[in-house]
Length: 222
Image (cartoon, rainbow, N blue to C red):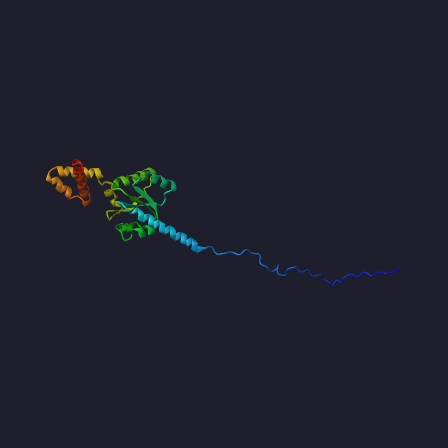
């Protein structure tokens, strides 16, 4: 009978397993990150700033008064309500002081410089009826009890009006009142005309315009 010898590996023998790809174990397991395109974000920001400056410049056309209102604390809804309460001849814009100043520098509106601090909403009035343009905000201010959100300043006819000077703007006579006063002076004694001529130049001009218009209407425009 044949004898079959079985052989077993020695205890010193070992089997080494190697991966098919020797680089798999050393390959880093991370996703590469790429820097954000900062230059694109900067370009968009610069474009928005330029658009804001152009918007402000467009509001300067046929503008009679610009007033700054302290904007801190107003909610979005309050701001929307305020906008709706304004007459069509007024425009309310929120813009950074630096951008507004960039738009007005070199113009008579540069006198707004004392307002260039804090957060402001800017009221552009495209009407000669200044008191009527200011009244809506005063009513809104009382209704919402926004004592801290007052006017921080305004410019009218190239002159700066601080918060304590707004009474002068709010009590200015309306165009109709000025016309009536001028016509009454022209039709009355000479002393009345002298008193009118001592009024601010703007009032006198408006009176004369009204008188010329009245004469044109009486003559049938001839």
